[in-house]
Length: 489
Image 1 (cartoon, helix red, strand yellow):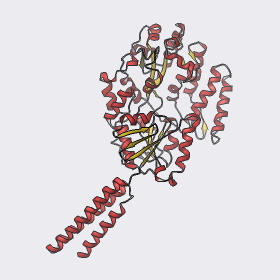
Image 2: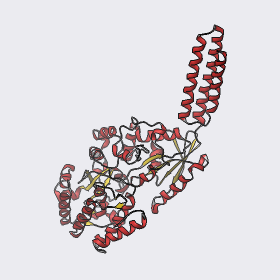
Image 3: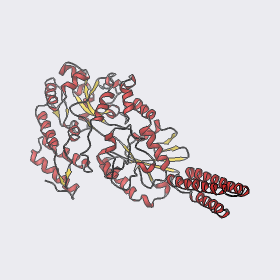
Image 4: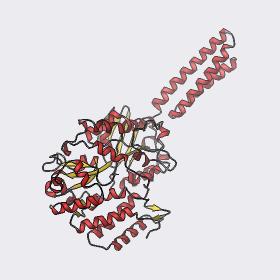
């Protein structure tokens, strides 16, 4: 028995020594193994003399204590000292700065969480610069020094699968995040970041369901009411939308830009852009082209580029725009609330669901494989995307539609959900309903490229610079150059 006691004790001590540098799961495995050894020794001790039993018990206690110390040390000291976050703008940084407990800002690209330095690697998305930078550094991840490793990186829906379907993004389950942890999120937000094997590889604090944001004064002139229910009835489907757009034109308004409606159509297609290696133009995209050209020719829609100066004129009464299409982030980032002379500052916008459910945008947090800050990464993801108190803070402070069914229901039933630029309207019931109606079964890794090139080609058609066939040929040529592996035309 004495040999067994000594053997078990040595095993425990050796296990404790091995914990340095182990991950959380490995630490737990070793600790469980030592506990099993301890139980075996105690059992043996009960079958021998009292003196030997005392010796065994003492040996076990010392071994277990050493393991517990090692577990604590490994958990505290096994994490990296630098947390590297890769993103394309300061949106997520502002959310962490304002809402993550314990975060302290140092300067524009640095902060701290406890003893860990946080480094924000921000590269704008222009000309694909963000993805190019991320790709380059992910390829170096395996050989990078600990302080240089990517720990968290952010993705958008249009290209999420590019990263989700690779080994560079960790499954959240490997961080210890369970299905129960994310059960209150909207299903579509998880579909976007689920790989082909069913592994969830990202999480978002946003549910970017979107709708129709209308000019209340224009609505009164065109349909005789600015009540959300009345406006919704006037734009409930594309036929009614077209009727209302032509009525708006008769009153001196443009309904919107052709590009404002694009995502509503593209989110409601019947098939993927690429099928069996070939590019397929869905009938609903053809509907967008035909419906848009009809309204352009009727003088009811313009062809302005999104975010351009002409497009932005609709933020003021003089711009004579009936509506924009957008999600909740559009309120905060795009309507110039607080600027003198804007419709938003006067509380002059309203919100309704519009012709079809759709979403636009959103930011997903992914854990980089090889991170040396797994525990902190896990806590950031859980805190920022599943903690009801934090999500409610974000919704109220930032007018964001958050990824929590419970929180949105609370906001919809409370004055806390009223938004000043919407004239005090509470849009959260509509946003929640929209989120439930989103179907992303036709999402593909080619969406970003195909959507961008299709819009660019069709603008020439809408502007009268190309026939429909010429615009289509332009699209196929651009896609063939961008994705030479695909069959086009």
